[in-house]
Image (cartoon, rainbow, N blue to C red; front, side):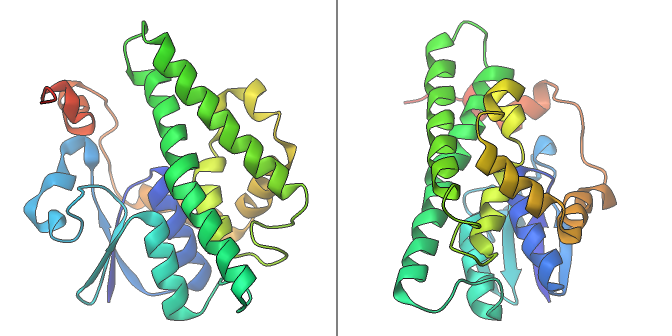
Length: 228
């Protein structure tokens, strides 16, 4: 049976949504990153990058949320775009846009807003600017498209939803309010019963809530290791 290594963060939620939408049988394996469980040798065999999500599909290891979505979509044939070159090209382009842009810049914007020392205005401004830039690109795209790839709900919308549903946390309420088309799709996906179940998966387990010094050292390795 497929093993799903996860917690309640945005990237695992993407994969959780796919699993809930499809009903694909899986074993949930919680990974408490605030306790450093992502660095256990048995998990690093699944994902040498030491991050969630990851899956073990009967000995086939896949890590990175968008790679997992693509793997599971191709394996099951579910929630994939129409089978033509343009749709596949669009799917791959937007999956990579989310993986390399929306997610990382949103995450860094949150980090420098919430966790970093307060005197790093340059870094905060850079990442918030880039987060806004990516949201604007998505918003413009969705002005002319019902879903991320045409008129079909696909794995790309799941990837989009993982981070975009947290737009007000990333950009602030006023900042997120600028992107009505993003909100429209976030609201539609969030209203799906599978989305509520995906978000609730974390509640089946107890994850560490405190962001104490031990958790910060596990989450932000640079605090204990100087760059070479």
